[in-house]
Length: 121
Image (tube, rainbow, N blue to C red; front, side, top):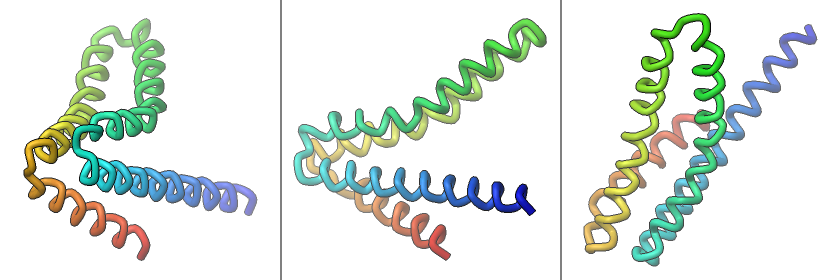
């Protein structure tokens, strides 16, 4: 019984973290639309969200290196492959706002709304 309650609390915590991250993404998008030239500073506020992932990846690489040395480059490349496209999409979106292109921002807002509504159900 206690394990089920602990699992439920963990799921609630994960949902709360995802919801807070989505709200932060909305804030970055709104701020970047209002003041496009400062959008890169707003984007920098998203980077601490990736810090636990990066620290976890570094710990996993450090742990696996003595056991499976061939796994280390695969973990590093896999981690970069997961983080870099997300970050570059944001950079392209903000640079587009700087030159007046709002199409990517509108698409991003729609996707954020869809995912936040899907998670509420």
